[in-house]
Length: 93
Image (cartoon, rainbow, N blue to C red; front, side, top):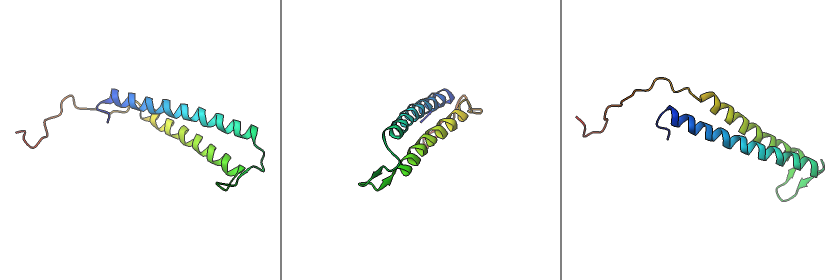
């Protein structure tokens, strides 16, 4: 768990980087699929049509885009944080 704004931003940046990598991967997969399969393609084992596969891949790409955008919007939004937090254990007096 992030302990301060710097750590939070580092974690958010790592998530953004992962989303960008995954988006690139699925975009390439989608492009390759479109180039190598005709519109009458059908996966009989999974019962998935060409259009359904395209929509699924586009959905994954959009989800990674939205996740990255959400994380980017939270960067640097730490608000005010106390410099010291009082000891909150039951034994402290």
